[in-house]
Image (cartoon, rainbow, N blue to C red; front, top):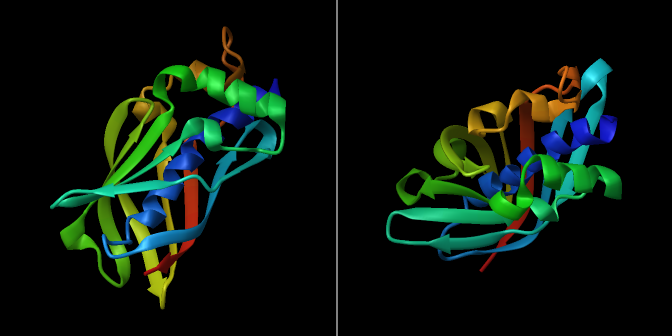
Amino acid sequence: MSFKIRSAYFAAAVSAVLTVAAVASANYQLAAPKITMRAKGPLGLKIVGNSSKLNVSEDDKSVTFTTELSSIKTGNDTRDTHMKERFEASKFNAITLTVPKDKIGKGGTIPGELKFHGVKKAVKIKYELNGKHVKSNFGFNVNHHGVEEKKLCAIETTKTGCADPDVTIEVEFDLKD
């Protein structure tokens, strides 16, 4: 049962990958992205998931980072399967973060739009740029993105053993010319 709870938080982690990439511009490509998703399960259970899959596209006004829910790995195949089922990866696999180009600078906090589980919401992304190394983080609540509260629970019918809906995403990568 705890595997299902852990899964919910890892899906959110994928969005972290998108955030870090937001500081990159059209002139750069990403090298070795490292995405870490963190969440809390019942009884203080710590949930951590990782991914390195990230695609970048852009237009005149924005940079969009896309990853896949199915790319998040928690180190437990059963938990990963539950995550995909609970967050409907077959229907909502793409996770995107869009950032306005004119807000990208040398670091600080910038606005972004996260699309997770088919729902778009504003997020604030904190990031720092040290040479060509980028470090970023943001948080969001999966319930605000259309994930039902019961989907975070070990026993959905009674809402027993539920995980916290808040997820923190950390992303690091290097920029290359």
